[in-house]
Image (tube, rainbow, N blue to C red; front, side, top):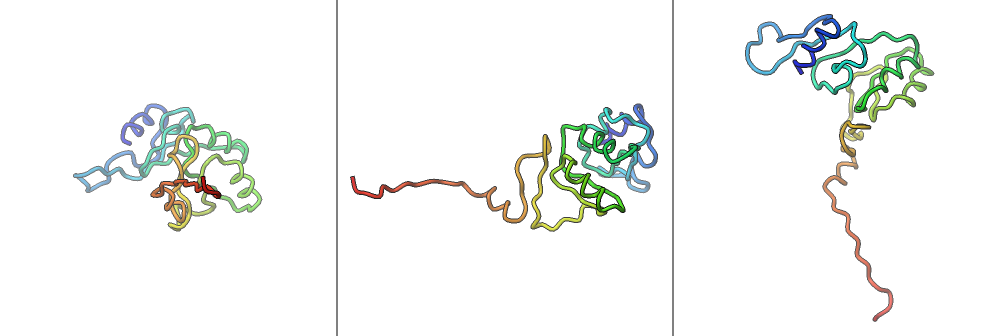
Amino acid sequence: MTGYIESARKDGRILFGGGRPQGVDKGYFVAPTAIVDIDNSADACQEEIFGPVAVIIPFDDADHALRIANDSQYGLAGYIWTESQTTAHYVSHRLQTAMIWINAGFDRDLRQPFGGLKNSGVGREGGSLSREFYTETRFTSFPLTPR
């Protein structure tokens, strides 16, 4: 994760964070970090960074935001923040991610499916879908008439 932050220092600008939290001397901790003034082709935008790192890219309208968001080989989760229910529906139908939250963070009920699109994982887990992960489907056929 720190490699992406260091790369972003060259490709863009760290708005805040970007290092170890103050007072934390041991362990693998990164302060919440925001990256700005960076092109969407940068590694920090194109890779899945599993940590407290956000890249902020301005956009002109919903279609421009969708072009930016969908320009990735990954599609785990997406977040839509809007006051417009129409915009929320429009964007959620076009956003290429498997999980979408509208005006909420990662507020997930464990019964909901979890998984991604594109190169973000394989399959689904959660709820009844978890059962299939541990199931080996078999087939047996019995003739209806004796041989």
